Length: 554
Image (cartoon, rainbow, N blue to C red; front, top):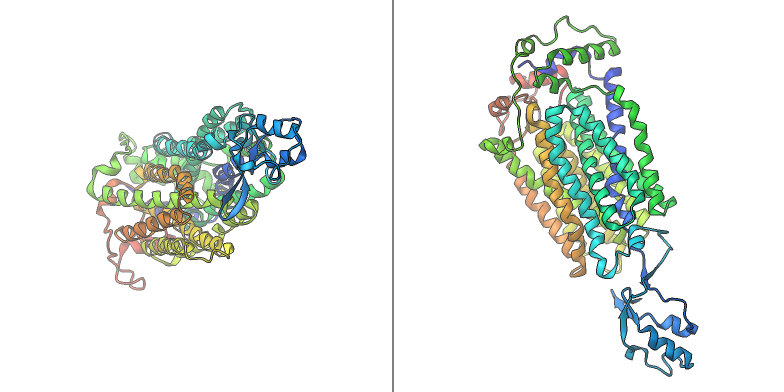
């Protein structure tokens, strides 16, 4: 097997070809920011109480018919019960005054048999108000998010293997189409069950195209541009989509119209099919040498350079061999790969649980939900910038461990913030989100560096699949605040510290070459670098990295 980066060095790292691939693939991740967190506004639960039908009630009795209850030391109207309407109508008809002639608290209560009245101060319409997902049906509110992430879970598993079997490009565009079309179809939902089925399919497409775009760009680009793309590009454009979401939702407060607005940008990606090539690395791993060379010759033409007459000498000799198919179980068969995989599974699940749990919690934080959502999105920008700098200058293992420990410490500190300073709790939660977002960006790079080309997409997809277990749990984890306000932060903080400790055991991949085959992964010295210093250049792998300007082999 030839050294791909050395063989394709004639292309350079930042020609017209690489620029198109970089920006188009980054741009393709913006709708993922919409999709992943749209449920914050689609399934928001506004203030509500039992609906009182038009009846001959005095103003005093209409105001008194809803019982009061104390929540967090504040009196609020009951959301799920009212005083019996027939009794109240009788008292009103007799001219009795509540609290004067009648002790209101002695009146028997009944459930909201006539439905609910919802506040429109913040949200004009959501699926909660549309399908009455409150009181006895409140579990459906959290389960809606879990259904979406269940779709993401299935997509992580299916798309990873499909992409390794069928190619990165077909899976990328197929899943982009699925996400766009079913986001629009959700508008026509007539029941919560119908909405949830479509939402599951949207989740299926969401992670599939994100992972496919990530791996496709990482395999096409090289050198410092690959570092920029993997550690900053896709993550930053995802955060841009996330930041745009509350801005759109602020002006479009009806859930159906919001879905239409979020689905329209997907139509822009249709022409991109003719701009994005298949991964030459993947084509080589399948023995399709001529197709890989054709893509590289076209890239050379766009960049204004001359390609060698023969690009892949050794690969041509091997083109007649039947390509080996790798599956998910190959990640667990061999001891060294299994050791790395299980630790990564724990880390990815924890980061996903924390990331989505804290993101979905923004509507419950002190202050305006739109502002909170925007801050939660904006905090990811410095997080991704820090991760990008870390990828350049710091060992992967150290960077990941520090980010997770920071998140754990910040979330532990939320419970000791003064109760009369809710902004302090919000700031600490955002600091925890910062650490988790940084760790997530680093883990995409780290994971890709640890696996060879022939199984890389399956590995990244599998890790994303396992992480969705955390995202499915996340909505219910946040719900633990009903029992104890500190529980969600303590659980997430503890898992972050545990995962940070486990990450210390991972092999280091900084300044090491990207493995192409399973055998090359086995031959790598994971726990130490054979070179004594960067200046001495006694490590042949490091020389190769310096030659092509490659600092991260993803």
